[in-house]
Image 1: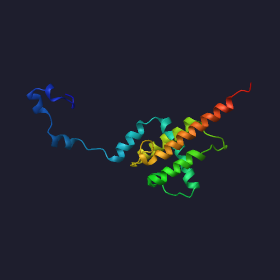
Image 2 (image 1 turned 120 degrees about the horizontal axis):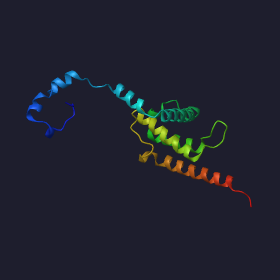
Image 3 (image 1 turned 180 degrees about the vertical axis):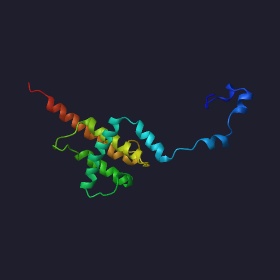
Image 4 (image 1 turned 90 degrees about the horizontal axis):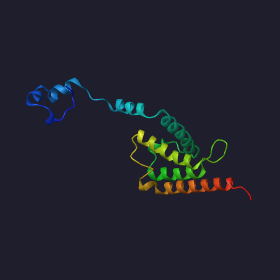
Length: 156
């Protein structure tokens, strides 16, 4: 008999054979928060984990260069919003070229994944405190798309 059932599916005799709550809890122990987190992490796509790690390495260099030594999770929302604004406006590749517009958006998603994975109580993609950085990102993406269009124009 499966341990998962709907009460209407069992007869009275079958119901009496089910373990009581105390018997069931004696047989099973709950997973720790660390074990649950490890399970979740093991189910994430490998490329997502790599992308998040890469993007966070890129992003975390920026606050460090600005003298910010706290972990991203410890930075208050108002300060984090300001850091994000500055990052989105000034971020460049190692060769000093611009990132693609979609790459800029992926940075914000990776930062949010990192915040979620570290139990942060903020959401840079939705919270009102991060409205300005979202607008900056939107404007930066628009600027980058415009530059690509101008570069791709052929003289006539």
